[in-house]
Image 1: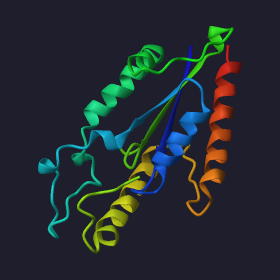
Image 2 (image 1 turned 90 degrees about the vertical axis):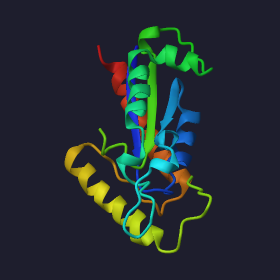
Image 3 (image 1 turned 30 degrees about the vertical axis):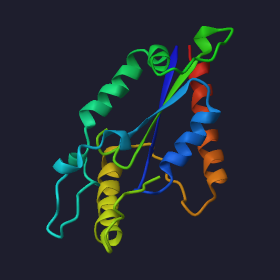
Amino acid sequence: MKTLVVGIGGMTNGGKSTLSSSLHQQIPNSCIIAQDAFFKDDSVVPVDSNGFKQYDMLDALHMDEMMSEVDSWRRDPESFLAERGLTAERTAAPEDKVFVLIVEGFLIFNHSSRVYTPHDPPGYFDGHVWPMYLKNRQQMESMVSGIVLLDGLESKEELLAAVYKDVSREIEKLREKD
């Protein structure tokens, strides 16, 4: 059994979940772990001097729980899928089976569709979300290699096709090993 972890990161509300879901639908033996599922309770999220909740920081997330999920998948992807009601693809040669974990979130590389109620206050995106994204991206680029940046001006279909092609190439490389 071979495994591949695909990280899809980027700014808040940038299409990560849409791309991840579409990719998951096309790749057999895949599943998604979404960082958005690991936010701490709103009452403990820090507030900055302007009164904005600091959701765009690692302190707003239960990263230990998220990493526990990733570790669980890495130990036994087939059991991980089964526990979540997903089934692995049946292949003639089990050694050719490749399991793919899609990890998506706005800060996934910094640690190794957004709709909020109430809506973001005026100036929140420009004054906090975008500067935090730029800061986190700069930090991520200094720590992680092999990252492919996507052009958010391309259509969803073009982005999906490009990422699917890259992931498929990596799956084939894994199958050819040994």
